[in-house]
Image (cartoon, rainbow, N blue to C red):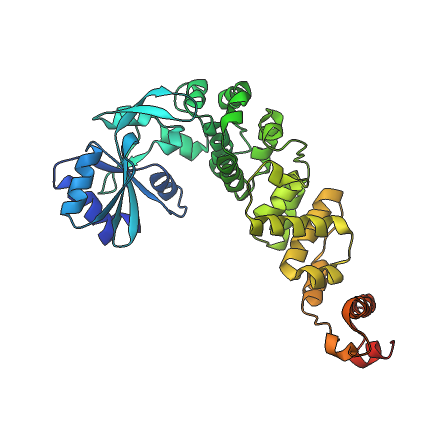
Amino acid sequence: MKISANWLNTQASKAVTGMLLDAEYKVYFVGGCVRNALSSMHVADLDLATNARPDVVMMLAKEAGLKVIPTGIDHGTVTVIAYHRLFEITTFRSDVETDGRHAVVAFSDTLEIDAMRRDFTINALYCAPDGTVIDPVGGIPDLHARHVRFINDADTRIREDFLRILRFFRFYAWFGDPEHGIDADGLAACAANLDGLEGLAKERIQTELIKTLLAPNPAPAMASMAMCGVLPRLLPGSDVSALAPLISLQEQLGRPANFHTRLAAINPGNTNACLRLSKADTLEFTRIRDGALSGIDAAPLGYGLGPNVAIEALMLRAALFGDAMQNVDIVAAQFGGSQNYPVKAKDLMPTYTGAALGARLKQLESIWIASGFTLTKSELLALL
């Protein structure tokens, strides 16, 4: 099998693979770029595997005039920059010793040995620079069947790196077939290794959780996470029952995936106690959650939050409480978001100043909102 992809033939790719091939080393694109190309999905990162040792890769890159960074040289990984494109190049290797988070590796000379240390069959796909695909562990049939499974023994793969528990659900959300269900052996191994989650950094947990929630339909994966005990360990008190209705609404209304809304659907509580959201993400999450729980009508909500956040909040409200949501709600939120309060502070001065000025402005604004945004500036000022 061969793949035809634009990234195979760019000047950058040819420069990086060429420097290794010209020195008579083997080099293959590996992992997500090959998997996504076979699935007709967007390719972001370009990773390569080679039998050249890291010091050799660095030497060849410098001789080729390319910038090289020893990003993970102890584990055989260097990053080469060619024509402003990053390539992560890792020497074939096997894991000699692991503690569930870190591994001691030994370099190897064969692709087959390298494949056996990877997590899932669909991630152990290799592609030569000419597009020829090499599948040492049966990843292509699994990709076609939308079957996400660990390579060989699931328990062993998880104990090598407990983050693979979360990656299992993430890849199921993106590549699995919910009609056939999640891989039973993998699910059982995840349930048997829940204690391993305790040693994972919250930042890594958050990254995997967000990537899972951004899948087109993560509801089956999140339900499986809840069923086997993974989700309660990550987000105590979480409940996935509102997620599927929310996703259905997003699809019905043509709304893009929003991880803040989806996260609020499964855990509307104090999520930041469990994760490490940025200030901006925390604010967005809080505004959507609080808007959903406020009970404020669509138009005033659109005015207060802006139309996009208000629509997210309205979808979340409908999903949480089983309410109906119509296009009229979107129109109302958009209408509210387009309104501008006609009264300014200077209109009330000097009659009102300080705290009294702020209070009066808010009072008139509440009257204006209650009027459906219909009262004019002069009508509002006449109420003084």
